[in-house]
Length: 232
Image (cartoon, rainbow, N blue to C red; front, side, top):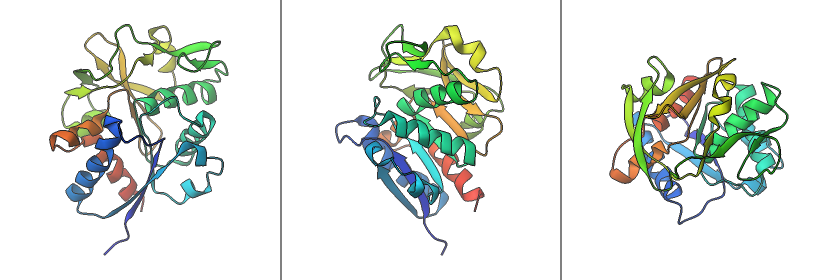
């Protein structure tokens, strides 16, 4: 039997966070779907001073729960996954931080900022016009995108827990290089991104892992784990 798939869940675990309740269930369901065993470890962000333990893991997921105890460690984790081709999944806060990491280190927007934690700078992540705390909504996907391929569909109904998202003022500029915007809500606001030149780098404002709480598979969690298996 092959060795367990080594996954890291980067974030500050809170037992009362709905997404954190859903994530182990989503991974368990994905492992059963793929008929594999997994070794999934939570890494608190304050433990991210040394990223060497992440080098030994086969896939990284920056989970919801921003602001994090160690924002710098989260940005370093995302950069490692992006530069080293490790399958990466980001949901909610992981999506927001992935967008900022890309803006700072690929687009060279050194002042790219998050309105939740920063007071000055280019507010790439800004307050949503309507809160999405414990809300659901329709999401549409770009045909041929990794998200659409994972779902086998061009749309889905998804759950959220957030007050911040991509500032529409910067949407066009963000999508100018390797970053593809591949998911939107019904108003055309950004709900998911992925990198063209990466084995699997997908981040969504919605929390696909919540499907597990309804005894359903999360297509993105399955696709993320499949990408890690493909690299073996």
